[in-house]
Image (tube, rainbow, N blue to C red; front, side, top):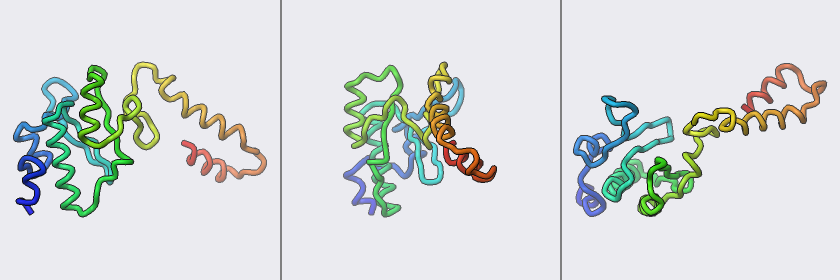
Length: 157
């Protein structure tokens, strides 16, 4: 299988191996902190790398390797790519095109919530309050038990 994978990307055993070899730099959350190249949550993944063609090719290669090993393709329709504010539009387009992914609006959402929260938290989460008010406004308080109200509230939140 190794011969089959060689033409696709440089020999890398894993994302950690790519990081050790300096092929992917990852992202540091603070000075002196170790770089983070990936985070995995059950069936979701967040990958961090510099927005250049070299690192994009390595990450794409790691993803292709995962597809082969797991035997299941990555659903590109459920995937997106986000960039820092200082990334040029040309680079964004080039990296997204190489990965075969769509650009996320802003930094996108995860589990229905924004992935990045800025200074103005009221504006960021205002839509959650609106959604709750809309749902609560349509309740007929006499038709729901306390348990029913709790279930409805949890379904909205």
